[in-house]
Length: 245
View (cartoon, rainbow, N blue to C red):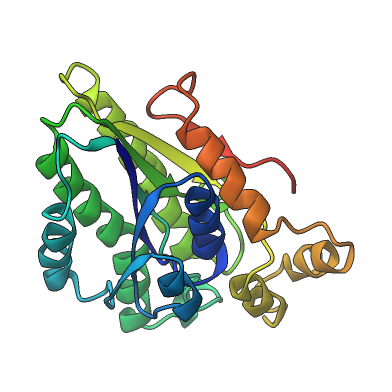
């Protein structure tokens, strides 16, 4: 019996670390991302190159992946909504309408669309089914200059909880978890450290985390997320955090 992972934003950063953990445990992986990773292709990852902000194309691409799977051969299938963007850093009044719309679209609308399609297609499958939404501590705490990021991640937490509520009494229920990976050593963190203090007042904390070697690394985060995905004691709807900073 196969175990399947479908992940967005898997070509780099946290997504690549997650894929590494699942591959190490024999999982068949499908990655949907704006860019592809040659090394992952060599290791058998099926990569679909797609700009997820083109939301009209998402369901068609997903359906192509879904149709490759055999209900009688899949023991477990996981969707990880990992793709996201910090967007432009700065007070709300400095952000233009296009930036606001695109950031909310990728961080919030895309996971809603993917989760809806996943539940609709797999609801009657007897396989174990989990949706993992990659969230952030910023969903629970406001940061100066991060209004769109904080708000869109808060939407992801509520999406997770409402899926859990709606699935609670369903036969073959889909489990939903939201996992915050902590502050991870990725290109996004490098971008944060290049901010102007006038736009992001907490910049010194993030610079110190890097200087002190206190950032989580993507491989450790990937392993923790895999472990949470396979922890039957975790309740659907839980908002979780990877240990560390």
